Image: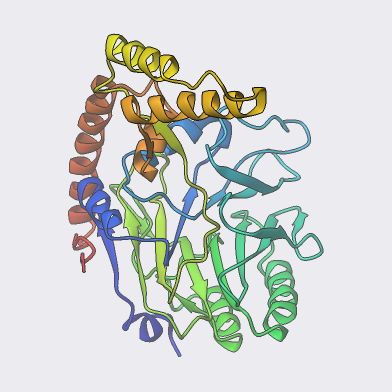
Length: 364
């Protein structure tokens, strides 16, 4: 079966920044939100990725990274790592390539070391994540453009054979540097047949890299999950010359460990009223109690009075991200949005030049 025949039933659309932000408003802890981005150097472009994600109401559960360009001679990880994520990575043997994945700290995750490989021309990272009672496998794979296709396909085939024996849902986010739009190419046909043999379907069926002269579909998300409803698409962004791609899997219940962050709300706080109330409370303490009872009463007073004048509140996910980046001021955010809007106007013109339709993903 040709790739286009498989993809006819897939709902995959381009998303501009404002619409994607609105789309993330509807996501909950029951949705597995995965995003893949070819960053072309993690040290160089992580800040741009963080700025883009900081606008979203619900941040991705899993952020797959290809072309980290981390290797033995350049092994330094970015100082500004993603807040509230654990980073797994498989480094390159050359100056290019390398893959990684940021997994939310509220998700149980285990690196499958015996399946993750790195050789000249290919890196693959495999992680088992806890999704309620059924664990799933998440893969991030990068194939260098000049890698021997037969060697690559043999490696992928062996890995998929081991994974499918366990009958777990698999989600593979990758940049294979295989243009699936070239459906008559023998290498493409061989690869499509390989993925079909393992029951994998591609959720990304539109170009992910567009220039004035060319448009190619190099970045893909493959899955064998046929039970859950999924949305997928491409985000119009200038993080690199590849569009970030995403997939949202709707699960039956939340798979996150509870991790709430609280803060003191001091908007209505008055130091005069606070000290006055504290003084009254302390002056009314009984004087005939023993030492232990007096200490207990004192501690209770110091807890109740602050809770009344500066109550504890729970941060939303978006508030938590904003507070973790105090340098990201309203003025800076406004400048970022202006830059993003200009980029997307140019990107839409590229899509039109290449005869590609732009349609935002549906908000349910």
